[in-house]
Image (cartoon, rainbow, N blue to C red):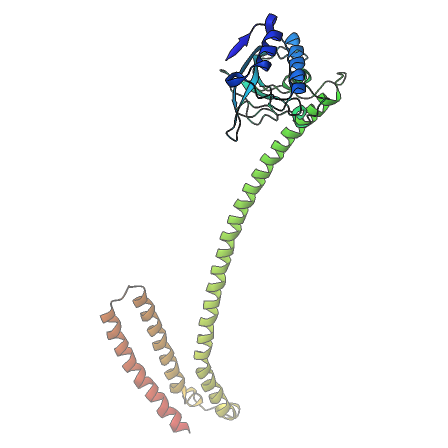
Amino acid sequence: MASSSSSSSIKFIEKALLATGSFALSYTDPDQKWLIRKHLTSFLQDYPNFELSTDTFNHNNGSKVQLFSLEGSLRIRSSTTQLPTVQLTIWIHENYPITPPLVFINPDSIPIRTNHPFVSSSGFTNSRYIETWEYPRCNLLNFIRNLKKVLANDHPFVLTDSIPTRNQSISRPEALDRLATSLHYDVLTIMERSEEEIENLWKLQSEMKQRSESVNTIITELENERETLKVRALNLKDPTDVLENWAETNYRKLTSMDDDMGIEEMFEIESEVEGLAEDDAIEDVFRVLEEAAARGELEIGSYLKQVRVLAREQFFVRQNRLKIESFHI
């Protein structure tokens, strides 16, 4: 690495540009070398505190080049206060001035603020001046002057007010930088709100899914209950038919009965209805025993024993009903 003081900067630039072999820089075009000499000289006249040197720069693609390097502190001042000094490292690109310089902020002991619009966490700066770089309109000195205004508007170490005062006169590039800064933070705010809204929508979706599952469970229970009611309705059909037959058979008797007719004579086939009630009662007991066995509340041995007893009793009840029905036929 070679370095020079401000008094011998021009000699150092010329010597570095004329170097050959392993010390040769990556600037090959003679016109380009003359422009680099001119721009570096102008820059060091305005910023004599920067030190000029040559060193190896590693590109992201792995290629290595020998470039001019400038290191120094940039004093930043807003309209009201003095802000922290920013330490810069400037690399003069091998295609300069067609390609803009590479500028890095050295955070030292102060970390760079997150989500800065123009400075990444690694310190690389990428302002609108760089994005809209166009030679010969743009050059190194004007870029650093613009960078000072950008950093004064939005400092990388401390949060500053990015809104200019009403009476403050600013240039078009600075106005664009301020607008870009404002838009950057507006986008961040919108993104944060969008993330919150998306999170709330995810929660709402989860809640709706739970409610949907609850509704499906209720629908399933209602379907089961409807099927149970259908079975019970079918079971009640036979007793209903018996009662209808009884009413049809005994209608005339009931309408023309004498005052001396007893209650037993009016309902002489009550035993048939009673048999149906006993049969239904036994069926209900069967159902209760089956449910208790399914829940494990009744041992299988006791279940089978009681089922056998009830089945025997139901057999005799139904036999009695058949006898009564055949008698009336």
